[in-house]
Length: 269
Image 1: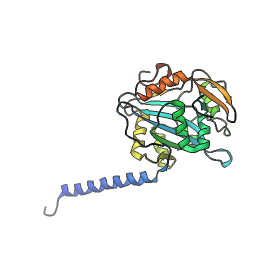
Image 2: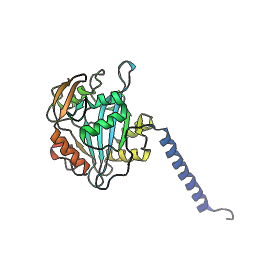
Image 3: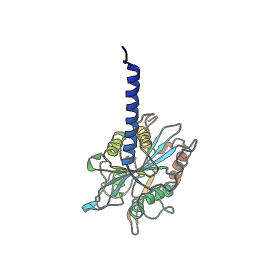
Image 4: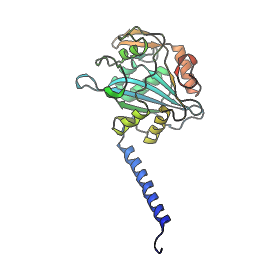
């Protein structure tokens, strides 16, 4: 029929849809909150090393106060093996490496201070950061006393199950990610995620794919907590075994499997 060209119309519709998708992506990306959390911005994964995210989960402080650090998780995106999910106690202290706890570093210096202290305490470089605003219904379970900004009570519950801030079981702190893949994307859509200023929506999608096990189930790893202690001016803290933590950091930095004794669940478990 003259003037009737279905292929041309289909191409036009397809082009419009593609442009709409691209426009929607950039609009959504621009709506994301951002903060300068990582002090260097060489974002290309080093060949053979993978890439590391720090996820920080925050809940509202008591009596309308500022956000309280409730959960910390390192996610290692492997370039050839299984991705790793490593739970960090907010109330952790690494003697000789940091002052106070990881949570107190955030309270003093914000996201950038938190990232710097996590790197100093663990020996693991952080390339990407996401801060996630949590609600009681986010499925985190116990997060400690609302007034406990150090998060140590939550750490003790995750290890010893005592319901108080000590003692801490040598078994270590089991990983408890702030969000699974679905929850992470849902909180992003709700405007409850803050990224580092150099990160974008497609980076977050790669993270969600890893948490969701799209390329295979991630390996969940604990840190080797050995004891708790009272720190002057900080309060109760948990302390990990420096030698075992160094082994974990070396494995992550070389994109190798973590020490078998620290693996909780995942590939081959």
